[in-house]
Length: 135
Ligand SMILES: [Fe+2]
Ligand SMILES: [Fe+2]
Image 1 (tube, rainbow, N blue to C red):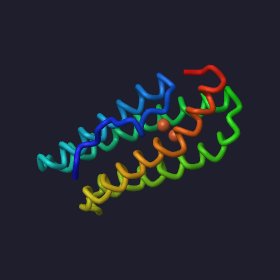
Image 2 (image 1 turned 180 degrees about the vertical axis):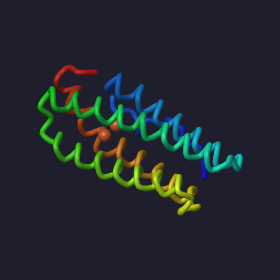
Image 3 (image 1 turned 135 degrees about the vertical axis):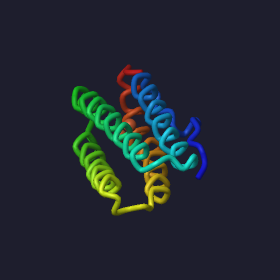
């Protein structure tokens, strides 16, 4: 499990969103560190909940931006956010109840999802907003 690092494919070109994506990646790396260091389940749950909290904030902020500017893919984008949040919350719930000890595959999936989402859907709105003077 490697560290998430910033690269060009993860730049959407809208400053506030790029900053939030950076924080999201940092938060994910902290969770990774907790796993690698063999931290206890409580600590892992705490980090996972922090990640969820920040993801909720970021998704809401992104959705508000897209809706404000009338981005055509806003509704589909919101659905995609909701889908991963539902999955994340269910995973956190399982982790708290100690039902699922497979945190590494969870983190791996999440990391892939985040990178693909930013490089795909998020970059689509980035280019669209840039064309309308939003950076
Ligand atoms: Fe997004
Ligand atoms: Fe995003």
